[in-house]
Length: 168
Image 1 (cartoon, one colour):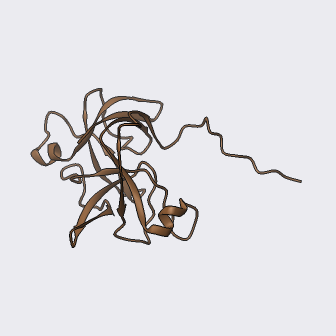
Image 2: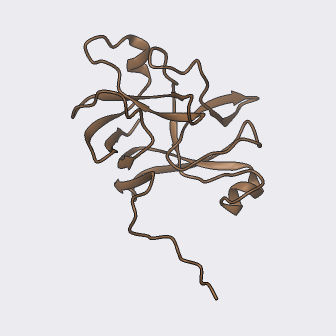
Image 3: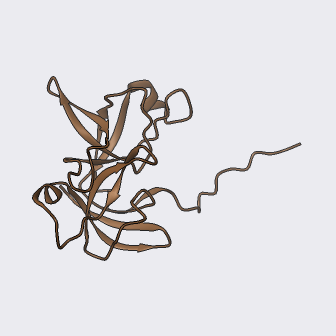
């Protein structure tokens, strides 16, 4: 006889809010593509259609030179035809976060250069087909990159990016 082993709640997660959870803003956005997968910690961008704001996955054009504008981090697991949060599957909405908070994530460009205070933008990760964080070179940042800032680096340790969202 075998017994299922529960997930270790002490294990590090891909994304977790570590400070400011009581003050951050949660907003449910309908998704543009109901067949798309969304993961907690993935970055999405707003798309307005008919006066309604919807969540869209980042695309190839959302790169380090032209990052996504108005990007928000996804708080919902939505897996079409599979495991996921049942409310997201039933309503076709995901919860996105904004406001001032601190978070730790494994969803960032691990090949980038990070130092405390570096600004972060949301860009497309072609390998995982989702939005993640990256830090432009502070010496050569352009206006578009400054418009796309979603946070700043606190530290990177053991493959985890600890960042602060500025409350935009």
